[in-house]
Figure 1: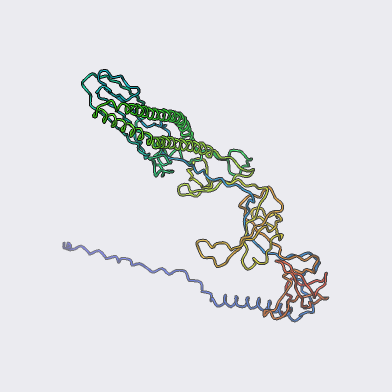
Figure 2: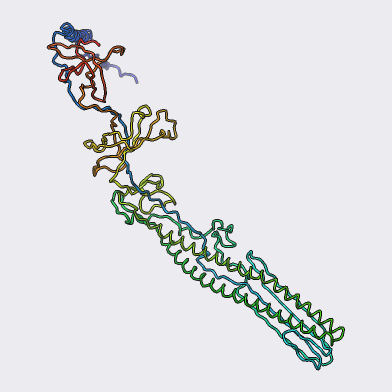
Length: 577
């Protein structure tokens, strides 16, 4: 837009620019060399002062005795050379309690009871004879016909067989028959029979076997293999009650009890089953006697039939040819059957004896299982065998290694508690093989306890190990020999497993000239004898000495010093070895 004419233009005002503001003047910097120079000067002055003091002492030499030198007096005293050992306390007499090892079959068959069964045996001797008219019946069990009639004789013997591994006695049956005659018959029959049948399985059979305990048919026989199955809780080892750790118990006092309710139930079942088996065994013997008598009666009947046949042989002269042959044949068969029955007697008796013996062994095994159950129940209630202190052992409980307590599941044969007699305590220590030869049985010692610094008790070396300790998982290049010490006096605070240090006395000298061990000096090369600094007036006199027994703190002087001499307990300034 153009400016209107006649109007003057407005003056332009200049825009101000930023101005630089100058700060206050900085103080002048001090030179660091001044501080460094002052420090060096101070150190130099201090060094010169120390050097001048040392030079003054060296210049004086033996002319005077500095007041800062410690001294000691030569004296007469008893001294002993000792060897330092470390170890722990333990009980000389203690009893370890192990979890009981429960024995017996794990099977359940015996708890159900058992009945012994006798063999079934039937014995019969039959004789049937038909006579014609005019004939008289013969005595006994053999029929004969003298009037041309026919006769029949029958002998039957049946003996049941055994089962379950016993010898089998099988039946023997014999028959002798003859034809009947039509003309006039008279019949005579004599039959004797005896039978005894008990059970279903026969001689030697067993039912309800106890697996794994030696019963026939069990696991392995003759003692059997391990039976399977069964309620495992009967043999569980859960700690139900236990004496408190650290408590004192008396001999015969109950200290631990395992959960035995299942074992007590098992014991009651065994008692009932054994009572049932006792009664069944008596019944078996009675039945066997009955069968033995029945077999004897059968043999007697066969003998009677044989006698009758022999009598019929006397009628042969008056009989026809056919009848005579029949009578002879009947007599021969009667004799054969009688001999057969007599031969069977020993086998029958052997079968009966085997049956009774098997049942007797099974009964003995049942009584043994009952006895084991009683012992198991008693083992699960444990008592202290001695007077002493209860010490509980440790076990893994999950992921932690903790002290055994009530409710823990333990394993058979596991040590879970110790009863220690604290009236006699031992120290179990070790000594380096280098120092082992210097220790003798009977040596005196002093025992100090880490838990009780003010407690010191005397002890005596009781025994030394013949071999060094095993190195463990890693090879041990420093071999140590076990040392056992017996405490000569006791303190109520002493309990097992306390760490101790022991000073065993090697040699002892009475009223010897004794000086502190730090007063004895030696040359760096060790070529010269040991020496001491003896105070004479205001200076130190160097004097060679001959040492004897040396302990950890003192040494015996054989020559060179007298009792009462004052010696330096540290090397004097200016005294050169």
